[in-house]
Image 1 (cartoon, rainbow, N blue to C red):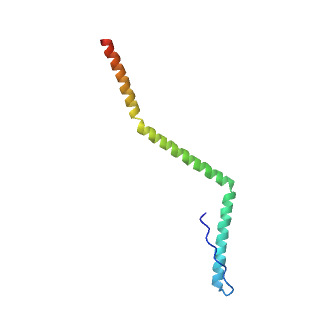
Image 2 (cartoon, one colour):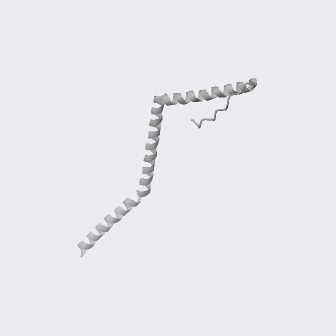
Image 3 (tube, helix red, strand yellow):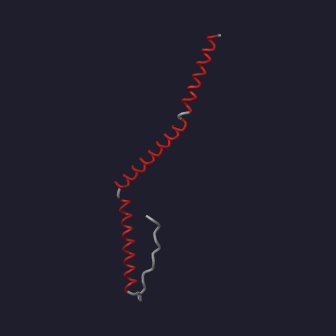
Amino acid sequence: MTEPERLQPEPGPDAGLDEIQTDIDQTRQQLGETVEALSAKLDVKAQARQKVDDTKARVVGTAQSARQKAGQAGPAVPTLAFLAIAAVVGIIIWRRRR
């Protein structure tokens, strides 16, 4: 719901039919919006569904972020591990030949 509009004063006693009808229409619209807002606050199932949807979206976003971070760091780790193993094997072979 948006910020409540300022209530305009009621038409005076010398108001014409058009002004009175416009005031009635505005009052009906404001009343309808108020009833809609109250209904939304009282609809527990809709609020629960919205909370579940928000939580799902947050979890999916977190998972995607984690996958992206893992993908960025992923290739460097196996390469470094391979180089470390190759260095150890090289040192072992070199020592045995001495």
